[in-house]
Length: 459
Image 1 (cartoon, rainbow, N blue to C red):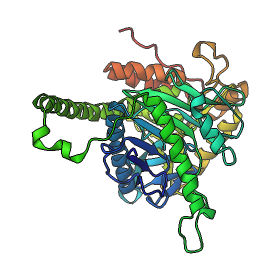
Image 2: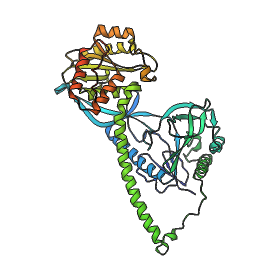
Image 3: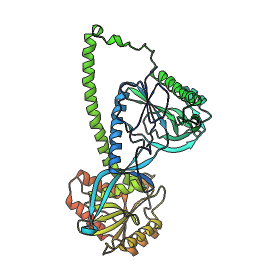
Image 4: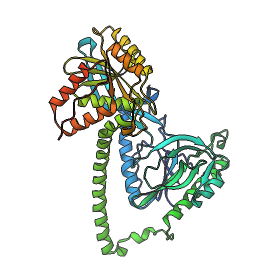
């Protein structure tokens, strides 16, 4: 029997080594790994921000450490040519405390803002995996590898999510009825495979008797899960099973000198791989942070808000979200020149930015001015990313006529986030304080209009 480690997928069989996401267990002893990408509410206390779970700094640090641990372990496990089985549960977004703090105001009016990052339960895997939520029962089989799985669990089968391929060369096992979504597949990763299976519950309440003991029915059900995983693993491995080495074969009299030398080299290589993987993991985080600017081109909602804040900081502003439990603002912006602005962001799939968000910004400006600590009404800026699903060259009307007229009347600046992207791209790649200052000047002087940034200097 192969050694199986199951991380958070609750199998109660004697031959399954069950681990929690917050454990620091090694996968080196396993032949097969099963992973359930859930954020277990029993592990972590949380509050709520913008309708999503938000974890404090202590919990966020622990979760990131656990993520880094499983990244390393899964990388090494797959490098060894083994198979990881992931049950595709729904994608869950949440916020982690970055540990960064920004302070505004002085004295009794001083406010400390906690900078948070948006994560999801699939960001903890050692690959950039795009998973989207969608539920259904009807599927099209594209490979016999999963046929027995479908037959065995047809009475409880449904899918909760699908994988966006994006050139990852995923071999489809199951597609949805319209055959445009991968609900089960195999991804070749390093020397091993990641097998994505539609989520099936590891147990049901009726599998426990009155004394809370797991019943024979539950054991039979879970054995069927393991039987299917072993069959898929065997097919993908494509190797003839060898007898396991007996313990006595490790005695000194049987040790081969050449094998010992090779093992030393392997250990050196594995240590080097581990070091490089840790560096790459840190670089991946750096890359994700730098790529936030790209969200100016195609995002909406919270990701667009975060991208605008980063862009404003590049331009030299102090910019942050504001939420005192009563009033919530996308951005509070203060320039080095002392000007104060309130920003609102809007992304539209296939429309221009209309008067709706404009009215919301007006309300925010008035509510902000009513706060006791605010002595002067802020200026308003509306950041628009219309037609975000359309290529930039084909985007036409950015703001509706009514929105432009309203901005002129109320002296509110309108900024196209795609133009903000190119300005910030230049500033990230070139240290140009004069251009940065000219951009801030242009924004302030152009309030009431669609703001046209100064021409980007040629390199």
